[in-house]
Structures are given as C-alpha cells and as structure tokens.
Length: 541
Ligand code: GLN
Image 1 (cartoon, protein in one colour):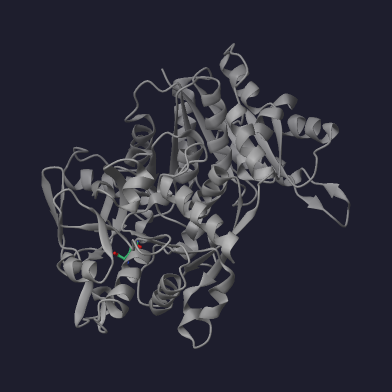
Image 2 (cartoon, rainbow, N blue to C red):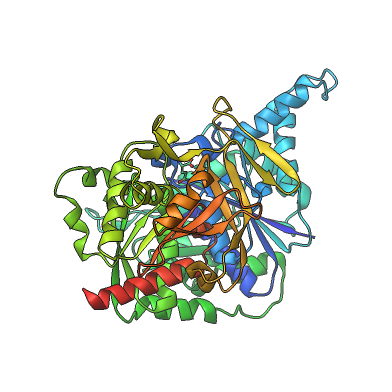
C-alpha cells in the first residue's frame, strides 16, 4: 500500500519545492522504492495550457496528452517515471468536475460545499489511478497562507488523519534568510510559516530549510524546538552548483534517512553513483560549445526549462559544457543584426506561438543554412525552417503560415484532423483555445538512409506533440526537389514530422518536442547529436 508524502511550501514562492519533491523521489527510488510524483495546483485555470509562458513558465506535455505544470518535467527527469494526466490537477479542474456533477444531479439535491464536496474530489484525485507504488509524493503548489490553497490543505489534512502516521508524512519547505546588516540567519519567518500550517491542522514532520548560508547546529536545534519538529528532521538545503547535485546534497543532510525513519523502514543506503557520475561530467567538462537559442520568451527562462535541461544533457553525453545565448528573435528583424550569430556553434529555434518575431526566426534559419551552422528547429522552429526553404530554395517567395494570415503559399497550415489510434480527432478554426491542439505522444516513421534514422537507430519512434498548425504535405514534392528531405512522417504518411537538409552538416526540424523526453541519465539522441555537431563546428571556427 502506497505511503503518501505531502510537500507544502512557506515564507516565499520559488523555493524549489518542485526540485525538492523530484530529488526526494530520486532518493527513494535509489533505495529501491517505486515512486510516483503528483502536483496539486491551486490556481483557477482549468489547465496550464492557456497560461502565458511569461507568468507560468513552460507547459509540460505528458505522453497521454495532458498540458501540465513544469514541475512535472523535473519529476520525470529526476525519476524517469513518465508523468500522466492523473499526476496534475488544478482548482479549476476540481471545481469544473464538481459543478458538472452538480448539474447532472449526482449530489441528489444536497447543498454542494467546499467541505466535503470539493475536498472529497481532491482526495479522490490524490488516491486515484495508483498501482503498486511504494510512495506517492504530492506537492501542493503555492505558499501556505494563500486563500486558494486552503481546500487542498484541508484535503491533505484529512488524508493524513485517515491514512494514519505510518502511511503519511508532511514535509514543509521554508526559507531561512540571511540578513546582512545583522550578519545573522533568521528563523522567525519559518516559525510563522509553520504556525500558519498548524492553524489549518497540519503538523509538519520534516522541514526542508532553504538557505544561502550554512545553518549552525544551534539554529537547527532552535528551529526544531520552536516548530515542534525533531532536530534531525530539520534539513538544511543550501544552494548547490547544479540541480543534479541536489539529491546527493539532501542525502548528506539526512532527508531520505529521516523519511525512512518516519515510516519505520529499515533499508540500506541509496546507490547514488549515477548522480555522482553526472556531476563529475558537469564539474569537469572537456571543452565548451556556444548554442544560440532564438526565441520569444527569452526574458523568462522558465519558459524553456526542458529545453535548457536537454541541452545540458546533450553536453553531458558529449562531455562538454553547453553555454546558451538566449536571443530574442525580434532582434534579427533589423538590418545588419544577423552577424551576431557568427560566433555560435549551433542555432536552435524552439517552439512558439504567434507572428511576433517569426521573421527573425526565419532569418536565423536562413543564416544557419547558408553558413553551414548546425540548426535544430523544434515545432515552430521546424515550421519557420520550412518557410525559409520554401522561399529561398523552392522559389516560393510568398510562402508563409496560416497562423499569421492567408499567405499565397500556405506551406504551414491549420491542422483540422489527425488520427489517434483508431479515432480521428477533428478541430476547426472556431474550436476552443484550451485543449484543442494535437497533444501528447504520436508515432512517427523515419525514412531509410536519413540522418534521423541514424541518430535514433530506429525506424519508428514516438514523440510528444503540442501544436495546432503543421507543415502542408502538399508541398512535400516541391520542397524535396529543392533539397529538403521529409525524413519523418506520421504512419499514414499525411503529417510531416521531421525535415532535414542532407547537404548540410546538421540541419533538422522536428514537429514534436524532444526536450520533453530527455533525461540526465538518458539524454535525447537528437540533443546528443546536435551538441556533437556543435562540437565539430567549434573546431572549425
Ligand atoms: N504555433 C505553432 C503551432 O501551433 C507551433 C507550436 C509550438 O511550437 N509548440 O503549430
């Protein structure tokens, strides 16, 4: 029977609760347990898919087509367990389900209330869709004290009571700030945050205390005393040099020992050799490459979380450090700016939406093609590379995407239907914005003799999608004659999934998001190959 670990956060947001959950998952896994990680998000949006990447960071897409919070990406990267739809829920989803049930009369005329109806729906979500997991780690988004979070806290309080102490644990992440003027670490905010948690009936069993300085033993004792937690359960969590150093750091501070002690589990030490090996590579790379990422949301790097991690993984695979220059594509719409790309060893145009900056991405693709610089186009980045090739190789000067109007040659167009298993999914331009994209894992067939076939060492793959437009298959012949190979297609041959330029050192565009499946121990082959091409390029320039 699964044990549940509930993770809350206090004092401030952005404490790295998601990483803490992911690292704890990795540590328990390294002790031989089967883990599952989940996130409860208190905001009212029905899904994170419609939220601005500026506010919310990346939308992480699962194999089963859910648009979820970016923390699920950390969970997957740290544990290798593919996240599912049933691993992330928002207040908006909970309420829309409760209200739909009320409309159907399923509450038999009862007064529908936050307690018990909403809290019951939350509890059902937490307990649902489990198999033989040993641990379910359940992170509650937001900060203790937020009005929105209350139903979730009430639900996990009840669960703690119902499951009992031997099947539940409350872990609270807090901050111990250093006040330079006083030259001291301050424990008061943590005391207040724990008090807040206790006021809703939750007593934390473990405190993970983020701090930029060493927390002296005396302070640790004091936190334990005032917060009603054993001294050994006060875990200092100092900033570390890489997120992949977090599991080892938490282990050294006794986090997983404390969890096992709580549940009365007598188990050996975790095997962390894999993590140490990765850190060895991060700490001692053999050279460096510079990748230019030409995007739109470059002022908030959380918008490209998985991408940044995948490039790091590609670096780990090639034993080099990958330095990323995040560049706003709009820059390249001005005369004389494209030369800024001269020093980079690889150009990557990631996913994106809307017209703003699109011409800059097209210019970057052209620069990469003409200057033989490795180019990796992901989703929107593939579509822009196809428009560029259509205009400048296939003599279609008015080629464009219907995402930005009605071009004379719609080489990229709105997709209105595609098949999933035996079903055909249909959309039209009037469909709702939320959840109307082609989402989740779809198979793709790679053509013999192509670069991608060589990279994947396989002739069929599945990758995760999130897009509304697609490259227009009707232009395949024309573009192939001009030198752009359609090397990956959906099994029915209708949807172009991958294009490449065989005459170029490394030019690949993919309609899917490979960055969602890359992991530190298992770097995605496309990123490994792209970084390897950048290493080659760095020897030339
Ligand atoms: N805007 C494009 C589409 O909807 C690309 C989406 C993406 O890059 N994820 O097809």
